[in-house]
Structures are given as C-alpha cells and as structure tokens.
Amino acid sequence: MSLSAETLEEAILSFLPPEEPLIRTAVDAMRYSLTAGGKRIRPKLTLAFAKLCGGSEEAALPFACAIEMIHTYSLIHDDLPCMDDDDMRRGKPTNHKVFGEAAAVLAGDALLTLAFETVLSEQAAALNGYEKCVKAGKILSSCAGAEGMIGGQIIDMESENKTVSAEHLAVMDRKKTGALIKAACLMGCISAGADEVQCQAAERYAECIGLAFQIVDDMLDVISDEATLGKPIGSDTDNHKSTYVSLLGLEECRKRSAALTEEAISSLSVFPQGAEELKELAVRLRDRMK
Amino acid sequence: MSLSAETLEEAILSFLPPEEPLIRTAVDAMRYSLTAGGKRIRPKLTLAFAKLCGGSEEAALPFACAIEMIHTYSLIHDDLPCMDDDDMRRGKPTNHKVFGEAAAVLAGDALLTLAFETVLSEQAAALNGYEKCVKAGKILSSCAGAEGMIGGQIIDMESENKTVSAEHLAVMDRKKTGALIKAACLMGCISAGADEVQCQAAERYAECIGLAFQIVDDMLDVISDEATLGKPIGSDTDNHKSTYVSLLGLEECRKRSAALTEEAISSLSVFPQGAEELKELAVRLRDRMK
Image (cartoon, rainbow over the protein chains, first blue to last red):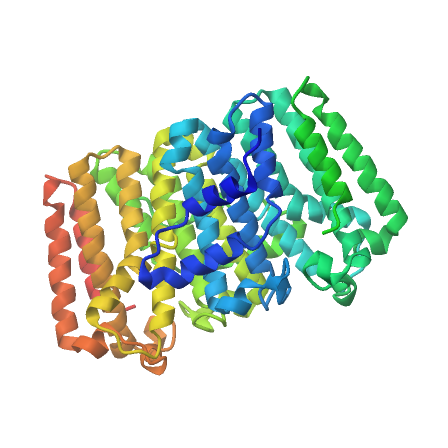
C-alpha cells in the first residue's frame, strides 16, 4: 500500500522550521507553496522506486520530501516578475503575488536549502545511513543545478522569441523537467540500495516519462481550458515560445507521448513484479487533463 | 602555512560545471560573482579551524569552497532590485546589472545548489568520509536556511523604515551574518573530527567575530568613503535602517567591537597553540577599512 497524499504532505511540512514570530513570513511563504495543490509526482516516483527495488517508503520519505521542496522552490522562482511573470499557479495567486517579490525570492532560497537539510537530516541518516544520504544529496544537487534543472531554465530563457528545433527543445527539457524526475527516481533506488541494472531501468523510465510529460504540457497549453489547468492557456503562444505542438503539430505530439509512455513501461520489465504503480503513473501522466 | 588566495580561488572555481555552450550564461554569471574580489573570510575560517583542531586544509577545502558559494549566492540575491536594489558591489557592477535579473536569480540558485554538490562531492567524501560530509552539509543547510541566514534577511527586510532596538539588531545579525560564520568555523571543526570543547570554542569565537563584524560594517557605512568601500556609503541612512551606529553612536560601537574581539581571542585559549592565525584574523576584522 502506498502512502496517502495527506501523509506525504504532513511529512513534507514536518521539516519546516518552527514558527518563531520573527521569521514567520518566511515559513508562511514556504508553507503556502508547499500546500498549493501540487500533484506530488516526483515524491511518488521516489517512494515507488524505493519499494520496487526492495527498500521501504519510510526510509525514502525524507528524500521524497526533499525532491518536492526543490520542485516547489523552482516554481516560486519561475513565476517571479523577472522570470515568467505569472500571477496564477494551480488556480491560486503565485507566491510573490501573496508575499511580495523579496519574500518569494527568499522563500524559494529557503526551500532549496531545506531540501538538503532534509536529505541530510537525522531522520534520513538513521533510516538510510550516511553513505546513502551523501549519494542521494549528490544526485539531487547535480540534477537541480546548473547542469540540470537550472541549466534548462537558462536555455528556456534564451530560447524565447526564437524558433528552435524539436531536438533543442528535447535538450532543454531533459534538463528543465527531466533532470529532477531522474533525481526523484534515482533517490528512491539509492534509498533501497538498488543494483546497477535497476538504476539504469529507473533512469530510462525517468527519461521517457520526463519527455512525455513535457509534450503533454505543451499540448494542454493548447487544448485545455483555464479552469481545468489552473492557469491561463495559450501562454506559450503569447510568449512566442517554440513548443512541441508548434513544431510537430498535435497529432505527432499524441503519437510521441504514447510511444514514450510505452517505452517507459517496457523499461520496467527488469522488475519481475511490483511495477504496476509506476506503469499506471506513466499512463496517468499521458492522459492527464491538467 | 596557509593556502594562498589564488589556490583557494582556483579550488572554488574547480567545482564549477564545465562550460557547455547552452548553459554558458549560467556558468559565466556564477564565475563573475565568485571572482569579484571577496575577502574570503568564511573559507579562511573553515581552513583555520580545521588545522587548529588537528585536521588538514586539504580535507576541509571542499567545505571551505562550499561556504564561499553560499556567501556569494546570498550577495547576488541581496543585490536584486526587489531586495536591496544595489548597482555596485566590491567596486564592480552587481550580478544582475551585468547578466540581467533572471540570470542573476538563477546564478544565485545554482551557487546555492553547487555548495551542497561540493560538500557531498567525491573529493569531499574521499577526504572526510561520508559521516563528516553529512554533518558538514547539515550545519551548512541549517545555518544558511530559514532559521539562519535567510531568516536574518527576512527580519532585515521587515525592519526597514522602523526604529528597532540594539537587541533586535543583534538577533537579526546573529542570523543574517553570524549563522554563516558559525557554519564556516564548525565545518572546519567537523572536517578535523574536533571534540565538544573545541567545537564550543569555535562557536563562541564565531559569535563574537560575527557580531563585531556587523558593528564594524555599520561603522564603515558612516566613516569610510565610496572608493575604499567599493559601494556607496551612507546607504543605511538613506534606507532608513536602524544600525548599531544610529542606536549606540560611534564611540560605543568602537568599544563593543573591541570587547567582542577580545572575547573572540580569549575563547581560543582552549587551544594551547596554533591559534595565532585566528587571533590575527579577529583583529584584522576589527581594524578593517572595507
């Protein structure tokens, strides 16, 4: 049985610092975005791979919480006026709209920092041992840093108002969204002490669902509506961004996301049993409406 | 003998990611601020405490590099238009003036992330072992996060245009500058496997020089000149900030910084020898002109 969404959220929030009155704004801003209705895809991946590789959800839980903190900080900073300048996210005002720009920058910084505090926490070390904590933190930092997610952001920023190729988009997305999904899967493997074959399967699964996820994202920006998506649609077109849809068309996007989902599922064949949850997750991501 | 400033800078830069063309802006922006003429006080503290507690500079070097990365990211984000909106830092245009706001936010995020990648690097683990890397990373994250440095920033932000007490300033500064100085000293102790008494002495030393440092900072904003300081003077007055000088007067500030420096030096008495470098550093910080 999998951890409930409530238990996961509770665990994430348990790592927040206690609310000293003087730093209340920081903690409030951190909590606001952590509880703003995320789909928790990344922590679920961590927990699912931990179980699949013979580990426990309990041990992997601090790693799962850390990956969600990194994801959340990246959304707060992405939404800033100097970045994408978004007012709404998941149907709610963005962090800087509620707390102001300065507090939003700091809340993002604090969540990024807290992610590492969580991976290196006494709880994480007691359940996983020091070596696994170091390895998980190393994967997390390299995937979240300039060679991973942040590098993808830079490429995205510099690609605006330019027509770029689908290959360029794939390089960008492999960093921008793919890297963190890879970290999520591998941190689960690390917690479980997975072998090389298992880690490679996890990495391939992550690559496929990461790219499929981004293709579906671009499709939803065209075919969804604001109420369902929780943010304005058509923003890619308005921002003159090249997307998989603008480059390949909707039909080809559908085909590619389906093929990638198939490949993700078949990469799990090295696991003789127990991979149903991850297979279903891949399908749900392909078929999602928001 | 201590590491030269050049060797330290080289070591810091060696952790930067290789310059793939697509992420060049990120790496350039990171390097720009890392080489912008910092005094390297924090990494020097890490190395000095490592030696003083019987460890080696070589083993403590990745921890020293990490603390300078955290310090550098905090300056980049502090200088942003939505924060202090500073155009100059150490006599050079601030990061966002050169690379733009979005890249400056991302370069700061990337340096913060790189700090943890560095503490958890193969080099750090090979020289210190996994347990010390976890402990060093834990101190670094708790001192840099919402309960430490970032909390201090929030308090600072919310104290603007208010008259606050010297006690309030001290609480703020203990977080804003003191926490990272404490982390610097303790990470050196951790690398060396220092005992409880040594760690307590390091912590007391850090507290004293941290507060003295901030008092001297406030004094320099009044008594220095722009050419020496590398940034406009009088900015605290212009920003209607309460400072130790505005609250206590210059003479009392001089007395307090002198007394704190004395106390920092006497806290080192638990070390029968080898503490000269740290004693001199405390005096230099008291007498600095920039």
